[in-house]
Image (cartoon, rainbow, N blue to C red; front, side, top):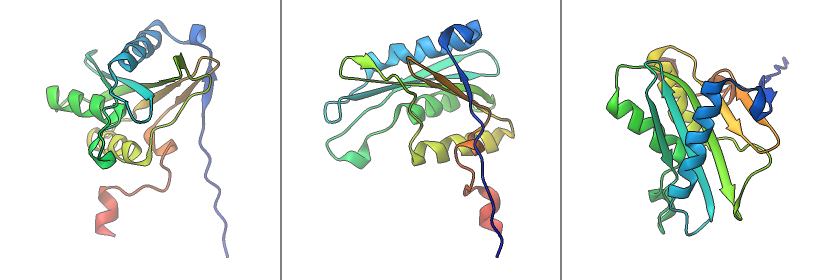
Amino acid sequence: MEKKTIETKITIYTFDELTEAQQQLIDKAKEQVAKAYAPYSNFHVGAAVELENGEIFAGSNQENSAYPSGLCAERVAMFYANAQFPEVAVKTIAIVAHTNNRFLEEPITPCGSCRQVLLETESRFEKNITVLLYGTKHIYQIDNIKQLLPLCFEKGSLNS
């Protein structure tokens, strides 16, 4: 028998320790929570994606009474960016959550479906996507999507 340990490396910052560009991306994500349609969960999520060309696209979660028909903020922002600039790699994504009239103290992570979509975008361009997860107490920076989805299913898995 063999055991394998998988680690996720997270750098923890306060907002003031981030670069100006990272702060602006988080602010864009924070603006999106007001645009979320979340009448069922009252859990508003905003995401902002920065492309390598400097363009920024943002999105919010959009719920539906038939739950599988809704879409998370991360996928809204990512698909919007990819639709506008299909040949430009994503550099960074910032994710923010808001509920009960306040931003969460601790960061939230993307759901499994969003992680898979983010991984596909990272693989598509063969470039790491930096992830910024916002909380009022801490901001987590993760250097690539595989850190969030270490035992992933990707294009190479289809050929195994």
